[in-house]
Image (cartoon, rainbow, N blue to C red):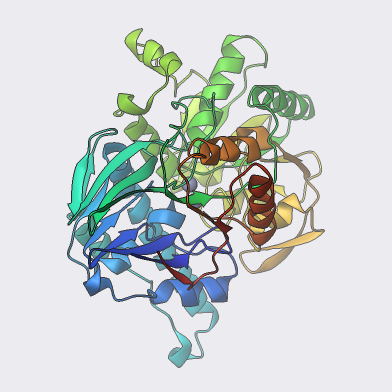
Length: 462
Ligand SMILES: [Zn+2]
Ligand SMILES: [Zn+2]
């Protein structure tokens, strides 16, 4: 058996691992790299393996850093893509959006270098590529064992990270030896709104575990609402705008749900709230279709014919015209827009129009990868580049890390230590090196001996 770590190794984005077992190749995730533009572009345009030689693919969840390069894969790969029901539905909209972003990106880039026709680029994949890959999905529910390849049975368990997210458990038989391999995907947190708690897996012998927050502790989830209420009060008094860059998947629904709750509890004044992201709107529609992912609270609301993702002052902004008209309107208002790391989408025009006013507030509620515009805002750099132009960062910036959809160091330790008695080898992936290394040291001190932080491109024979 061999594991080839092809992405999200020594970094967070571009999740991709190729497992060879019984002569078959199983691809775990096929995500896009995000970060420095040139480097990401180079990594994303050519897959570091031969797609036609893959036998089957498993997808942990719909985030683009895990699913985003499936359309490119499927130009040469005709096999199955196995995932959960919700992830399949989410991919239908997320991958279309990704194709759209790439098309716009290429257009923008090519316009800038119009006088150099030899340097023009094309999008990594097209809408047609997305259509094709969607025909290859096979969706299964949590907890239903599925025969994956020769000698490999797969079961997906709820990872509690985003709608449909799964921990992948492979029960492998190789030359009369039995072995349990666990691929964590991204692990969520206990008591996260909307979703069920992550499932702990016991008896893993080999584990590939994410380490995004391997050395950080989140503020308690309960404090998220307080901070959000405080931010809303502040901009309400200033009659200004609260701009919330948000992932279209999960965070946008969480924020809407939180605001709805705060209104219901009379903890904030009424004010207009806009979800200005066509993708977030479509994703919200998909949420309503997947009760298998909901926690008790949300299930009860649906049973009582309440909609957790709607309230009277909420407007879903669909058209571009309505989105632009928000620029002309005075606050107070809340604008929830994507993309979450401020790399693309309508959030860019809201930032461009509002970042220069110290009365406005930018509220960061999600993970910001290195070199993204979102990270520069978190670091409060004095000027930031938007649509190719420098803008002075005058707006107040606040960060709420309590919303994180990732387990923090305690949650990750719990996940790893659930298999303490059986674990032979632990690989820490999906983390910046300082996080992964600190986590490795800590887990060694808790009795796990064989821990390795692989680099991108490294393979390990087992
Ligand atoms: Zn994720
Ligand atoms: Zn991820």
